[in-house]
Amino acid sequence: MNLPSNIALSRLIASQRAMDVTAQNIANANTSGYKTEHVLFTDWLSPGGNSLDSPTGGAAEASIAFVQDRASWRDQAAGSLTHTGNTFDVALAGDGYFTVATPNGTRLTRNGQFGLMPDGTLADDAGNAVLDTNGQPIRLSPADTQVAIAADGTVSSQNGQLGQIGVVQPSDPMRVTAEGGSLYRADVPTAPVVSPSVVQGAVEGSNVQPVLEITRMMDGLRQFQFVSEMIQAESDRQQSAIDKLLPQGT
Image 1: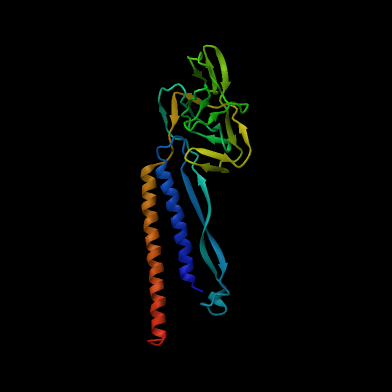
Image 2 (image 1 turned 135 degrees about the horizontal axis):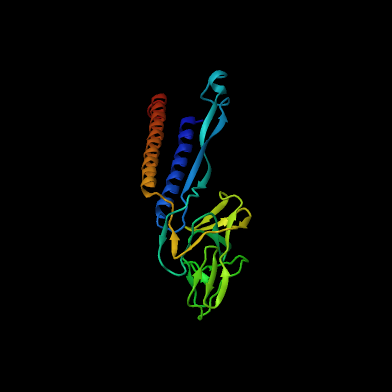
């Protein structure tokens, strides 16, 4: 049983996971509404009593700590708002998510770069229909030219009210699964936000701090290299021991 290498390998896998998540954050630094993701590692303790490398009793009874990829979580801090002046761009200045209809079902998003489809349906930049408070698409007619979106998400034109953009909040904001850069699948029930704060003519940027993420990646790379070198050194030590113990030429 090669405990040193196994323990180091668990750390190596954890470092690789951390770098993958950091790389994803950096890649989405300019994705509207993106939330920074972080990983959470813990110790996984294994009884050491059966170790072939330890004598009976004493140190043999100690636990062996492996690194475990426990979970990931997202920083829910709001990104900065950029005012675009575009009629159908909207941003959330408070809690909640917009809802859109995708081929895989209803999804949540903070990316409010909306626009009109050829049939007048309000949609996100991927063509997914934006849903109202009743879970239905919002459609405008060619005659609706002077469009205003109120702070509660109500969409109106010179012809009257056209609908209200739905804003919901998951019961547990950490229980959402990312699907791409700006869509999320809620794994828990959602409820309407009573008093949403919708800003017309603006979009929310990501909350990624590029300098911090690059620094984190450099630190992760150094750790990865250090553990890799340790595993290689342990392999060389074992090979040297085998070469000395086994007769030459056998």
